[in-house]
Length: 184
Image (cartoon, rainbow, N blue to C red; front, side, top):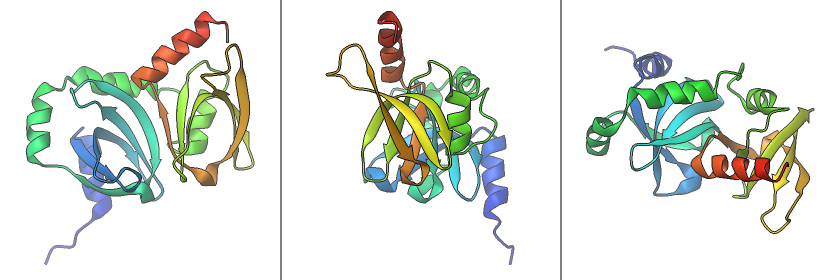
């Protein structure tokens, strides 16, 4: 009997740039279609695609939030017909400053940039804004508050409470342009 090697299978998926269907515990009944860029025992880094097969951003997630992922399904078989290789290259461009595929690695890459990120916490909260620093397991973040015209609110989030950090999602790009227009 041949022994199954999960890490070897993951490596084949990553090296083959294979699209996967990712089901999340935190988003019951929903799934994402993505390329897996990196995976280890704690984190999964994805280039995500929207339902219309267009780029939907890049995220690093806790592996424990992944319920399962499929490499072959009827949906993926049809979906892949509409995906351009350019989307993969765009996703990699978003990751060019990321040295470690962890929350801390993403934070380091985003510090002192104007890139807007979305952070999801384990209790379901979502904060949108800019990473301004991190230290001792805590992320310093300037949160965009829709009803607070002209300023960002500083917040501190423990990395232990984060389940996902996303960048380059379409609504985040729109917000980044709006903040730039307001000189924020």
